[in-house]
Length: 294
Ligand SMILES: Cc1cc2nc3c(=O)[nH]c(=O)nc-3n(C[C@H](O)[C@H](O)[C@H](O)COP(=O)(O)O)c2cc1C
Image (cartoon, rainbow, N blue to C red; front, side):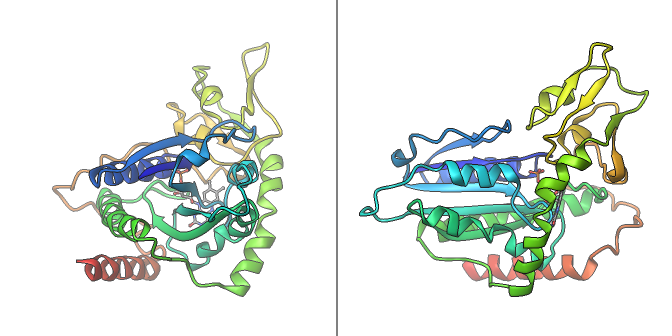
């Protein structure tokens, strides 16, 4: 089978997941093409008929899919009405195991059904990179190990065309619809991004910004324009931790995880209790799903 996966990733979670999907599909003998979405222009999607399955991966932003993903959906070529719809699987990464994030793909199935595509699988993975706080190494390790095990189970469902969609949530859907204001609010919030005196003008943020929103002024200082998606990639990638994201200044977590099993337990952090019940529920449900496939 030939599989095409489009994904957008700001801080690396969705990229890690897309790479894991590729690796796992390939171990079953399938051919996978990954296409990372970058830039604020709609992606050009022309050769889609050459693929048997399409995957779309994204980070959940304010309980919604980022703007760039909706642009991708609009750019999908219309397929012949007489042909059977092409099956699509959606991969969502989130920072918190909140049930409401289930609704983030709400708009997408309808948008792409009209073009001849059918979303039959939607999976959400709670991932370690997080813009609110840093997890302990143990928590990051556990999260990624759980995600990798889930990928195996989910891929087996995809290959068997087994439908797996989250339950509909009316109130959640309504709230997510309101929060879609983030798509426009991001443009305003992004104007408030600044650099502090630690900036060494390395240009990494300029090159990393998926919306081409950061320009270098004549005096060498950076100017943040009106196209921000508040994906936080610039903040996350800055080696000097020099970008201050305006009123979101408490939302910055730099630094990679090693994802190796820590030899010593980490000292407790003040975030250990954050969403503890929700994390425990996520792990319990994941375990149940993984074990049921064995
Ligand atoms: C602007 C913004 C909004 C976010 N909103 C949510 C959210 O509503 N629910 C959630 O669980 N995570 C949320 N997150 C966290 C991301 O979904 C999570 O860190 C994701 O895995 C990042 O993927 P990436 O590293 O591929 O960009 C948000 C992150 C950003 C930057």
